[in-house]
Image (cartoon, rainbow, N blue to C red; front, side, top):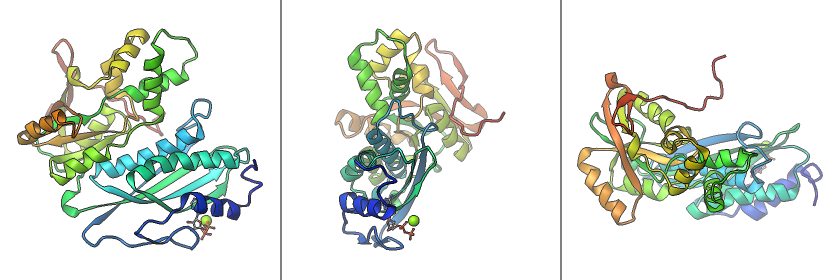
Length: 339
Ligand code: ADP
Ligand code: MG
């Protein structure tokens, strides 16, 4: 199989276009011209998001496959579109390739991106390709759309609104720790596998988000990429409010409970701070709580009521297992920590 360098840039782009660049109705010109040309529904507004992943900063090829990298990169972007209540439509992929990468590696990377993209209806319409000295760079730009009335922003909530989160939290962080660990553990293999999958193949909650958007139920929303504490503090800062979160209510999977038991840590700590879950954190008016709970029982949504929005002077607080209220520690990932 040829390495990336042996294939010319143009042969590579042609290959990518043929294999992955299938046209969708809204694409007038896809890969191959100076710009992609698309139409869009005049009743909708456009959402645009981009994410950059760099080898050894965001992923470690010792633990993840090229397919996993592509998959997760796409989920990160889909999750951003979900967090605004939107529908994904088209995407562009920019890659910088070290010479060691083979055509097979590149195919795997694109297969990983295409799997969730196809599932949610996003088409590859362009990108850019460069050589790289020794690390892989991958950047996806995803375009989506939403009806103006359905747009859900980070701002818009009111004091007294109730805070919900989809799915379970902390699984991805536990999965990462398992992948990185060199010490054998007693954690059941099935739990280890499940948690690692939650790290490598997270879900983007587009269905839940679109349901909330359509019914105009969420007064604000953000996706959890940094961790609940970090992303809740972003949400509260944007709205100049505080919040109180009940730690005993955090949705924790049975596999994370098993992990915490054997790893001698607290599941709710991992759920509070662990990143890359790509679940949705949203607020609703107290009148809407019963509707969300009904959707839960009807399996339309899986969302847990974890707390309440408070005035800013109350800051961010947690209610602990013993019923004490204390200031929430915030551990958010920061690429540029102060030295
Ligand atoms: P330009 O010199 O105008 O930037 P390129 O030769 O870089 O053009 O790209 C040619 C076409 O291939 C464009 O349509 C571009 O969007 C697309 N393209 C380039 N690299 C990629 C890639 N890695 N994945 C998908 N499409 C790509
Ligand atoms: Mg180019």
